[in-house]
Length: 230
Image (tube, rainbow, N blue to C red; front, side, top):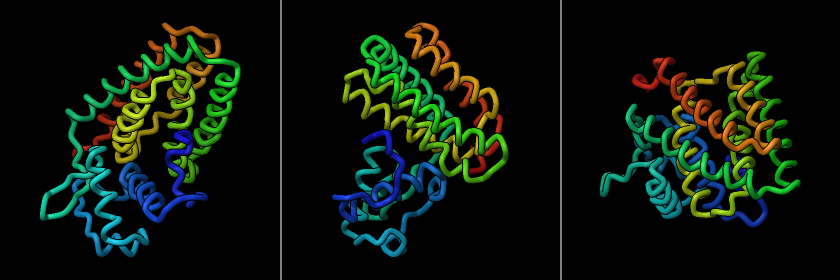
């Protein structure tokens, strides 16, 4: 299930490669593997408990997702960051998520509404931790922020759009984590308002707020001053 996209625990039926893939992707998104960092297969073999062959397959997959750069015979690096890319990713996320949100508001049923409310409740608990300065929130924020935004658009019925959106979300979330750019009370209030607008089926207002929400996040990233130094 995409709603547990950032869960790195081993799950029933997983291969070694499945678990390693999620762990590596999570480490890139959370900035534990830094932009442009050389990915040394022998070292990764120890950290992720996977063979060199499996790691090559994973890194090639992450290269397609543009979280990793393949350098031919020279191996792999974590994808670099770039201000122009940040703005492009935000625009693309707004475009995809706005369309999916409209479709979901038009088509979603009571079960979908319940998923939105439950996902927001989980996100709000982590946001409270962050507001109180508890570091555990940093670890969980991306996972539950993703869960909420995914829940809101999950009734759109467009699998290709959802796959593309999830990749864009990962790449944009990496900038947030590198900048440590949680906006505090404004972000919390926007999430609450988004939840309410979605449940009330107010598509125009929800889409307008979503665009503001994503752009405000980008502004916060840029104001942090940490991206150029990352």
